[in-house]
Length: 208
Image (cartoon, rainbow, N blue to C red; front, side, top):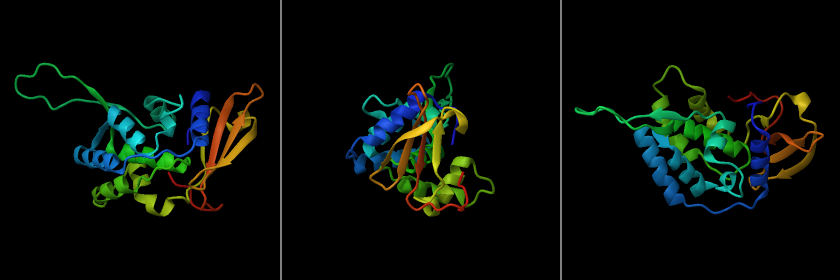
């Protein structure tokens, strides 16, 4: 996990984790999954809509924007364009994430303690991966998700190396059984968030 996130990102995720779980819309999420798998892409707005339909806490309470969330988890936004047709002399781009990267974001958010189930999207994408010799990091996370779910190594989002974190001052157990610990420096700034999965055991292979 990255060591270059902002203190605002660490504090925002911590604030979101402390809030009660909020109900979403399974039907809306299912439709977004369907559209994403069909096109291979999800627009910025579609990502936002999906999070609101699953667990809106990372975006609520003044926590983070979708863009800040994508940056914190190193999920790339890419400019995409409709394939030009005869007579076109200019195109308008739309920022999107690939379907695999969206699934990876959901996996990472689940592993950070949020009440998000990436399984429907991962299962819809897995058949596409069976014929490929090489996988991206996001695709590998999708491939491993069934056996790594709730068992992955602790996730760390930090503003710098371990020696700069200060001391842990707060901890909580999420509704899904993850233990989250917040670190602050001497000035009181949030410096790191570590989250341990409920079924993780030391010595297990580290997932990508």
